[in-house]
Amino acid sequence: MSRLTAVVSGKRLNEGMHQLEPLPYPYDALEPLIDAETMRFHHEKHHQAYINKLNESLQSFPDLQNTSVEDLLADLDTIPESVRTQVRNFGGGHANHRFWWSILKTNEGAAPQNEIGAAINGELLGLEMFKKEFIHKTGSIFGSGWGWLVWDEGVLRIVTTANQDSPLSAGQIPLLGADVWEHAYYLKYQNKRNEYLENFFKVINWDQVNENYLTAKNN
Ligand code: MN3
Image 1 (cartoon, protein in one colour):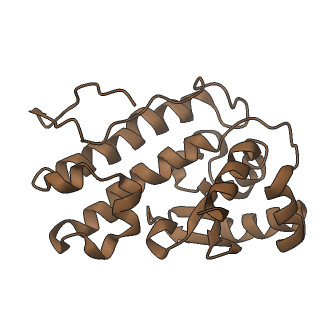
Image 2 (spheres, helix red, strand yellow):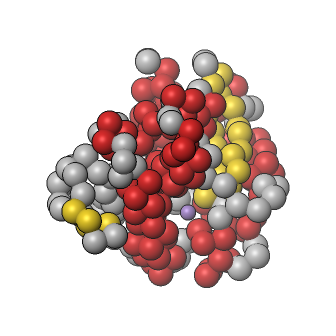
């Protein structure tokens, strides 16, 4: 990861501070399903804001600055109470978005292959059933949150989290996730959250999800 010097609130940050990484693809890579303007704002403004706020919150906690955000979230109980809510919200926002960018890629409607394809067929009764349940649960979130496919101690599960809560804080490993904060879809889809979720299935990078599955399974 690059170690560009970042500045937050006029203060020079330590090397260990959290930073926004560039997307591994152009902002228009998911057009027309997720538009370039939404991608740019989502990454440059929303994701960056979570990182800035996380870094500001951790200014008096040098040891936490050098811990990965995923580790912080997996161990929320050990975070000092005075900063725990900030780590949960802003650290969650950082981790969830970093994860989100990594699982997006236009897939032309292809079904998952390999181990994750077999696991979805075996445990979740196939792609169509999985998709139906995922969209139902995620589409029904009241307010802002995320829908997830997680590895939960050996079991594949569809779960949702409110706000920027991470499945990691519940001991679950995310394999794929869908952001249903309005900033993720409103420009293009307005109030049609389910239509956005239908199209989300056409931009899942199944190879990456398979990799996430194998990593979770072998740990
Ligand atoms: Mn978002």
